[in-house]
Image 1 (cartoon, rainbow, N blue to C red):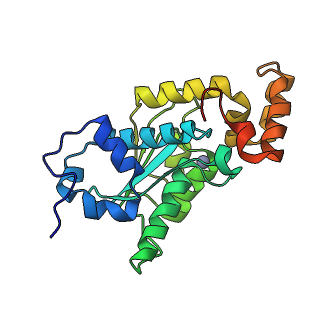
Image 2: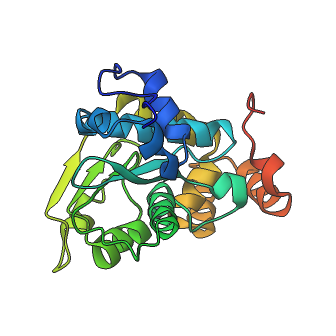
Length: 235
Ligand SMILES: [Zn+2]
């Protein structure tokens, strides 16, 4: 059997976690010893989510990442928001991870995936659309939220009702909070569109909360695809 590149004795640091973030999920079992994942705490998996958010940011997109682990602490899905990269309003960090988990299961000939014994870790509190997926479609055993500073916490929405998630933890990752804060300041238009759509951007401009120039910027982002949404300093 081929030796694992990342073994159970490999130290837990950003370089290793960033490597895991960038390796396609279906290849992780070939290069990472399952015992390495078993020694990771929730905050380490959240760090992988933040490194996926960083990847998205460097691509000119919203810095939000999601990671799903099974009951054996193995990663079964991960991904990041692609609103900036693809004008895709349906792929948030959480839904990117869900889509990845389904894709990887399909490669094995499995699925649809049963998420009831799995944990969703998301770097920003889930929007209402993602809350519905997490609760009603997937019934996650646990949800861990990495940032309720840059957006109002949706923990009450996740917990409410018959399908409410019993186990919700707020585990603020300072680097995730700092990264999203920087993004929201540079691109308030994309932040608001991603969260509540163009209606919310119009309201914020009307209220003087966001400079009017961002209305034109958002329109360019739609008509010109990728380049117009790139952030200064990022190629
Ligand atoms: Zn969402």
